[in-house]
Length: 306
Image 1 (cartoon, rainbow, N blue to C red):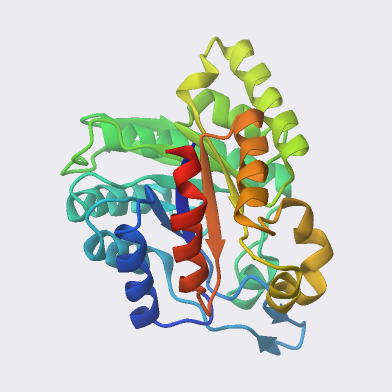
Image 2: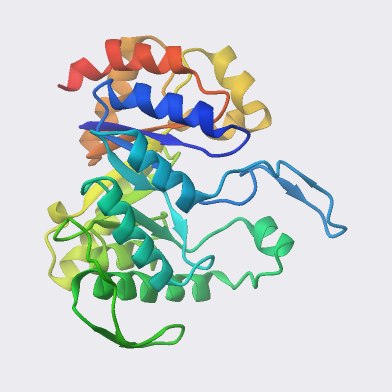
């Protein structure tokens, strides 16, 4: 099992993020990622337009900063909302990011869920099936642009005619991941088109079930499921008090998947995820960032999986 850190961009500063990224880059983690929101994940947006939690840094710019601030880790996204940017925009951004990082970029994609952001900016919040069909096309469009000299595509949402994305990424195949746990469509898209799959905050038994669903989809399309990197985002809280302080009313929802207790208890918990099929565990952080807790995780937990 490998370990990464997923860094939320809400309620923080570029200085704080850069310090965190530099510290993580030297701790033995193999991954750092950013998310894609315009508002904080727990922002409140009312019909009258009153908001809270609107402090959030933009993802593509933050991704570029991450690429330049680090030298070792893979620089990922979990995940870009395909409704916020045309996939050709994301493909060109990905190629440039890959040059900035010297070939360390992974692009995660998803259908989006934060209805408040869509409402605040006047964007159409499409029904779930529509957003998933859009995601299915977007990953195909990006793959074509990133790998083919010219791309032609005709779909429900996107149209390419002799389209080019130059220069190409440094990587021969820049990894594209799919985020989400939907078993009928999202995991099918991952099986058909993705190099990796990510889902947040689910307990090991549920994760095991979804890995099996992904495997079943792979069998149907004739793909080896081992060719898809499988990851899960988990929160780290060394005590129940820390968990409650960080998540408040969300504590009961987050607890079944949280990494809590002693180092040995956390190692055992991570072993459950490894047995369930996880290749990566991403420690999900929100500001204020607990750097000391992350140092302890790197020193007392990660060596058990070396």
